[in-house]
Image (tube, rainbow, N blue to C red):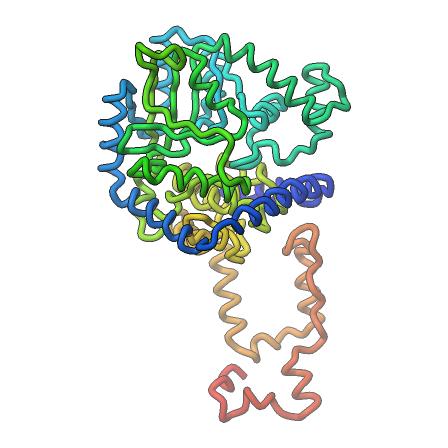
Length: 472
């Protein structure tokens, strides 16, 4: 725990990297501008937000029934549905699928849940190449990095950074434009798509009443990932289910508006099973792996379950002053920003990740922009409480707070040590507020001491007739 907290503080020095801050600010500002335009199209925005929240809440309230209905309908469509209690179970299912189908090369569309179970690293141990096909994911994979942002994996890189990276790795023009880089990646991936044995996707939504997997994207790589290879594997958290296909058009638009500001993303697919004998395109086999990995545990909590309503739009990250300062990698977790700070301790343990709840100013901006009305800043406060309950308070912290309470409960005790001695005590730890902050200078006298010296009596609000006078 202490090591993790120290590492978070050490890694946060990126916030003092002016180039990094400028790149992050530029990229987030572009999204912010687009999202404002997107939201302006809704004349009843508050009603739409409430509808989205209500549908997700209803889906989670009847989660067991919705998942069983999804399994029934998907099985009828020819899809094999597999259940995984944790990441290890999911990887075992995937290994068996690979072995049964002779899979040697895999293409993947953008999927945070595959990052959650560390699928790429697992494929490496099996000697299987897993190639990311989303442009942002391909960039960070080429750089040997992890996704930086839930929606925009390479948000921390400028176009110049990417041009240099591709020049180093592929020998492309060091002055290549974004259009040049996109064309290069497209040509490179087309050959890989054609030779891949399996395609792996996530799922933006699981549609219970039709047994379908809904995917939304802007590049078309997801569509090719599931249609070119003979095997399609979709991995989804159990919370991604929605009850009816009638709700899907709204959620496709709602996700697009809050993620990128679009009326709707460019490519939207509802996949309801492998290809039929009459079809020439599509996978011969389709598998859906339903992952729990702490989600059902989270569902049992009084308020925290609301975090499962998340539709992964990334709005809370773009709004968070902490995320915009320290960046995505400082969190040391798959899911970052406010939603990551809420979810990760439940998925990976409070002992290791409970400190993420402290990466919050409690400004409430994340709750304000959430499209499904998750009270994120309130849940972070609950996480702080749960962290103490599960891991216990540090002895030094308890002693310090007890001392603080004793001293500050009496004006006389607080003034026993004058400003000169307080300044000397403060010098014992010059960086108590952080390496880049200076501790404020204590005045020689406190306010009450100065008042008494100038007026010969205590301030009126602390007079003998005032109950607060007991603190004198």
